[in-house]
Image 1 (tube, rainbow, N blue to C red):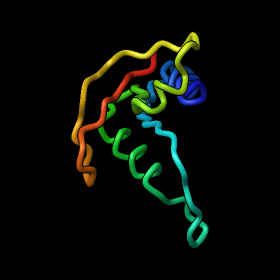
Image 2: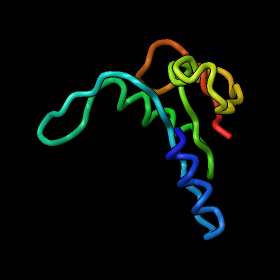
Image 3: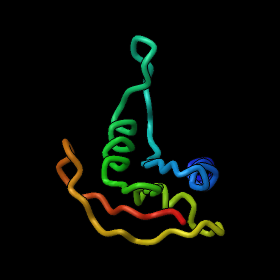
Image 4: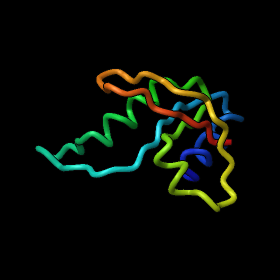
Length: 92
Protein backbone atom coordinates (compact mmCIF):
# COMPACT_ATOMS: atom_id res chain seq x y z
CA UNK A 1 0.00 0.00 0.00
CA UNK A 2 2.82 2.41 0.82
CA UNK A 3 4.44 1.76 -2.55
CA UNK A 4 1.18 2.50 -4.38
CA UNK A 5 0.56 5.74 -2.47
CA UNK A 6 4.20 6.83 -3.02
CA UNK A 7 3.89 6.21 -6.77
CA UNK A 8 0.55 8.06 -6.84
CA UNK A 9 2.02 11.04 -4.95
CA UNK A 10 5.15 11.17 -7.13
CA UNK A 11 3.14 11.18 -10.37
CA UNK A 12 0.55 13.81 -9.37
CA UNK A 13 2.85 16.81 -10.01
CA UNK A 14 3.36 15.45 -13.53
CA UNK A 15 -0.38 15.46 -14.14
CA UNK A 16 -0.56 11.67 -14.08
CA UNK A 17 -3.15 9.87 -11.99
CA UNK A 18 -2.89 6.17 -11.30
CA UNK A 19 -5.60 3.86 -9.98
CA UNK A 20 -4.62 1.00 -7.70
CA UNK A 21 -6.46 -1.86 -6.04
CA UNK A 22 -4.80 -3.88 -3.31
CA UNK A 23 -5.82 -7.20 -1.81
CA UNK A 24 -3.91 -9.90 0.03
CA UNK A 25 -4.20 -13.61 -0.65
CA UNK A 26 -2.66 -16.61 -2.29
CA UNK A 27 -1.46 -16.37 -5.88
CA UNK A 28 -0.31 -18.98 -8.36
CA UNK A 29 2.01 -18.87 -11.33
CA UNK A 30 0.55 -20.40 -14.48
CA UNK A 31 2.38 -20.11 -17.81
CA UNK A 32 4.55 -17.29 -16.40
CA UNK A 33 1.44 -15.32 -15.34
CA UNK A 34 0.43 -14.53 -11.78
CA UNK A 35 -3.15 -15.71 -11.29
CA UNK A 36 -5.63 -16.54 -8.56
CA UNK A 37 -8.56 -15.11 -6.66
CA UNK A 38 -6.35 -12.53 -4.92
CA UNK A 39 -5.23 -11.18 -8.28
CA UNK A 40 -8.82 -10.98 -9.52
CA UNK A 41 -10.02 -9.22 -6.36
CA UNK A 42 -7.20 -6.66 -6.61
CA UNK A 43 -8.07 -5.98 -10.25
CA UNK A 44 -11.77 -5.60 -9.42
CA UNK A 45 -10.94 -3.16 -6.63
CA UNK A 46 -8.71 -1.15 -8.98
CA UNK A 47 -11.64 -0.96 -11.43
CA UNK A 48 -13.68 0.80 -8.72
CA UNK A 49 -10.92 3.37 -8.05
CA UNK A 50 -11.12 6.84 -9.48
CA UNK A 51 -8.14 8.80 -10.83
CA UNK A 52 -5.46 9.12 -8.17
CA UNK A 53 -7.07 6.63 -5.81
CA UNK A 54 -5.49 3.71 -4.00
CA UNK A 55 -8.22 1.39 -2.73
CA UNK A 56 -7.76 -1.64 -0.50
CA UNK A 57 -9.91 -4.54 0.64
CA UNK A 58 -11.12 -5.13 4.19
CA UNK A 59 -8.52 -7.89 4.39
CA UNK A 60 -5.71 -5.36 3.89
CA UNK A 61 -7.27 -3.00 6.45
CA UNK A 62 -7.39 -5.79 9.01
CA UNK A 63 -3.75 -6.71 8.37
CA UNK A 64 -2.47 -3.15 8.88
CA UNK A 65 -4.49 -2.55 12.07
CA UNK A 66 -2.39 -0.72 14.63
CA UNK A 67 -0.17 0.94 12.03
CA UNK A 68 -0.11 4.64 11.26
CA UNK A 69 -1.64 4.05 7.82
CA UNK A 70 -4.83 6.05 7.28
CA UNK A 71 -7.78 4.38 5.58
CA UNK A 72 -11.22 5.81 4.88
CA UNK A 73 -14.27 3.57 4.53
CA UNK A 74 -15.70 3.75 1.01
CA UNK A 75 -18.54 1.30 1.64
CA UNK A 76 -19.46 -2.04 0.16
CA UNK A 77 -19.18 -2.83 -3.53
CA UNK A 78 -20.39 -5.71 -5.63
CA UNK A 79 -17.28 -6.70 -7.54
CA UNK A 80 -17.64 -8.44 -10.89
CA UNK A 81 -17.52 -12.20 -10.60
CA UNK A 82 -17.74 -12.28 -6.81
CA UNK A 83 -20.92 -13.36 -5.02
CA UNK A 84 -20.69 -11.28 -1.84
CA UNK A 85 -20.17 -7.51 -1.55
CA UNK A 86 -16.70 -6.36 -0.49
CA UNK A 87 -15.95 -3.52 1.91
CA UNK A 88 -13.46 -1.14 0.31
CA UNK A 89 -11.21 1.50 1.91
CA UNK A 90 -9.31 4.43 0.43
CA UNK A 91 -5.64 4.91 1.37
CA UNK A 92 -4.64 8.49 2.07
